[in-house]
Image 1 (cartoon, protein in one colour):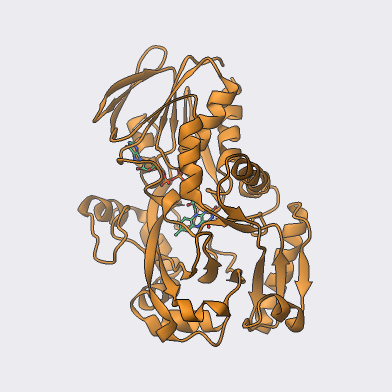
Image 2 (tube, rainbow, N blue to C red):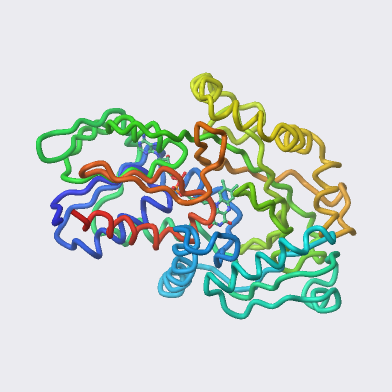
Length: 395
Ligand SMILES: Cc1cc2nc3c(=O)[nH]c(=O)nc-3n(C[C@H](O)[C@H](O)[C@H](O)COP(=O)(O)OP(=O)(O)OC[C@H]3O[C@@H](n4cnc5c(N)ncnc54)[C@H](O)[C@@H]3O)c2cc1C
C-alpha cells in the first residue's frame, strides 16, 4: 500500500506514535491526527502511572508480550534522543503470602520466556537491601523497568510527526467513499485514503462510525491514586508491586515513584459511570446506558461480584486502601495518604464478561482500529505504531 493521505483519530500516545511511524514509512504521505480535546494526551496517556513496563506479566507469544518487550526498548531510545525525563530504576514484584509463591514463580518464567534480562528472585534480606521498608516473603527484581514522563513523550511525538496534529477536532461522522474516507469533525471535513482509529476510551464508538460491528465493548475502569506525604516518602525508593491476579489485566495497587518527584499509591480499578469521568461523582447518561445495556457487563458482574464489590468499598474507604498498601509496606498509615489524581482505563470486555487481555487491533478494508490498548499501551506505543504500519502493508 502506498497511501497519499492518512487520517489518525485520537491524539493519545498510541495515535501519536502511530502517526510518527506512518511518517517514517510513508514520507510522501500527508498524515493528519484529529484530536477532540484542546491538546494531546489528555486522557489515558496523560493520566497513568508513568511506568515503563518491560513485559514480565504477559502471556508468552501474545501481542502484548511481543510489543511490550520491543516497545520499552524503543521508548527508552526515543526518550534518550529527545531528552525526555526517564529513569531505569528497576521494580520489585513482591509475594506477601505463601499462596502467592507459585504465581511469583510463574511470573519469573514468563519474564524469561518473554526475553527480559537480569531478572532475579530475591529472598527477604535481598529485597530489603533494595527497598528497606518492604514486607514479603520473596520478590522478583525487574531491573529493566523504569519511570518516564509520558506527557513529555506525547508532546515530543506531536512535534516530530511529518504532518499535522489538529486539536479541537472531534470526529462525528465517517463516510466511506470509492477509494477512501471522509472524516467529518467539529473543525471541518478531512479526506484520506486510509483511516486509523486510536480513540482510546471511545474507540468502539469510532469503529462503529466506520461500519465495523465490534463484538467487544469498552468498559471504563477508573484508577484512583493517593499521594504519599513528603515526610513519609522515604518508605518507598522506586517501584513496589504486588503479585497480580492472572484473571485480570490490572496489576493491583502498588507504589510508584514519579519522574518529577513524589510517590504515588494506586491505582485501584473501579467501574466508572463515565468514560472520561475522573471523579467519583462524574456520570454520563450515555456511557452509563451503553454499559448497562451491554450483556458483557452483566456477565462480568455475575462472574466477579466479590471483586467489583471490594473494589467499590476500597474506593470509598481510605482504611481499606491503606490496608492493601500495608501488605507491601506495613509502616504506611492512612495519615500518610493524601488524595491524588485518577485515570480511566479503556478496557474492552467480551459479551461473555471476560476481559480482553491482549492488545486488539482490527483491520476493515482501508481502516485499522485499535480496540484494546490498555497498560502497557503507553510503554508499547511505538511498537504498536509499527504493528499498525505492518498491517497496512499486508494487502
Ligand atoms: C490509571 C492508568 C494507569 C496506567 N499506567 C500505565 C503505565 O504505568 N505504563 C503504561 O505503559 N501504560 C499505562 N496505562 C495504559 C496507558 O495509559 C494506555 O495504554 C495508553 O495511554 C493508551 O493510549 P491511547 O492513545 O490508546 O488512548 P488515550 O490516551 O485515551 O487517547 C485517545 C485519544 O482519542 C481522543 N478521541 C476520542 N474520541 C475521539 C473523536 N471522536 N475524535 C477525535 N479524538 C477522539 C481522545 O480525546 C484521546 O486523546 C495506564 C492507564 C491508566 C488509565
